[in-house]
Image 1 (cartoon, rainbow, N blue to C red):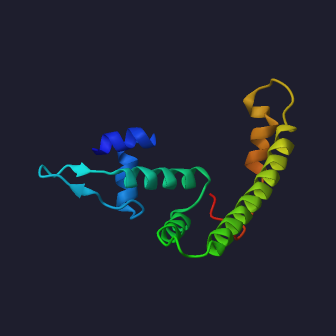
Image 2 (cartoon, rainbow, N blue to C red):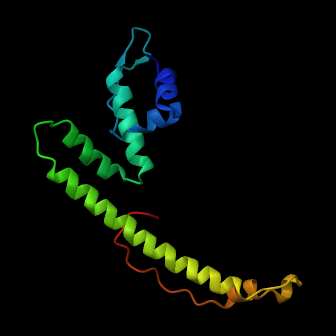
Length: 143
């Protein structure tokens, strides 16, 4: 199948397929005599796997590790469990950060309870006066 067909089956764009190839997550396909990429069912399965991992917020490094394990079917799945446990830890850390962000935003929202001139808006004044802290060292790969 051609790249457009692969993209359609995997529910992504042609650019996404090319990007994953460039990143080494998806193996380069064979080329036809006319130099067109020719993909197989293996590419479809792999691309779906990659897209499912991305939908779960996994990094390319995590996906590479999982693909390497997937390519070694006789290996034990302890590494898979460890990788997923670490990723769950990243999600937990991000949830804590988002909870703190929500509290800050709610506090800021309380600064303006009525329709008034922008020059008197407590939210805008609060944003202007708010002291920002240096970014804390993150132990997660989420942005």
